[in-house]
Amino acid sequence: MKNLILVLIVFLLTVSSAVFMTFSDTSDNTNQEKKEQSKSVKKNKEKSKKNSEKELKINNRQDLQEIIYSKKDEKTKMNAYNQAIEKDILPRSNNYQESVYAYEESVWLQNNSN
Image (cartoon, rainbow, N blue to C red):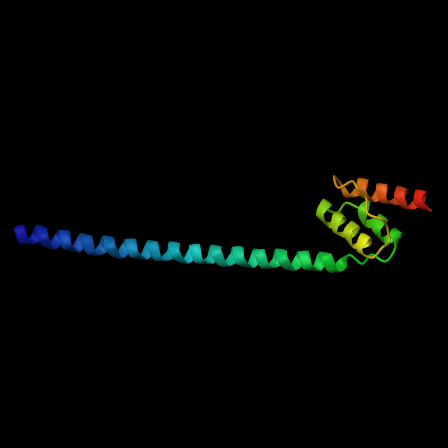
């Protein structure tokens, strides 16, 4: 009788450890999959940022105005504004709160300096 109980305990422990290992292995795989997915999402975001910066082809004030008054995000607008400043399309504004205000002040500075 004692031997039977010992055999049952060993058997249950063996089965339970196998089940535990199976579930822990699948959770490790899902964690690895989540990490890989987050890496791919980060890479896609970096690529989209690079593409959005490449899309900003500012050649004159009209191009800048279209981007500034569009529904694009503030970072894209400010990047476009900074590109225009670097290309000497507009003078730099002292206003850095929002791209629209910076653009309008730059236009005012350009119109009143001539």
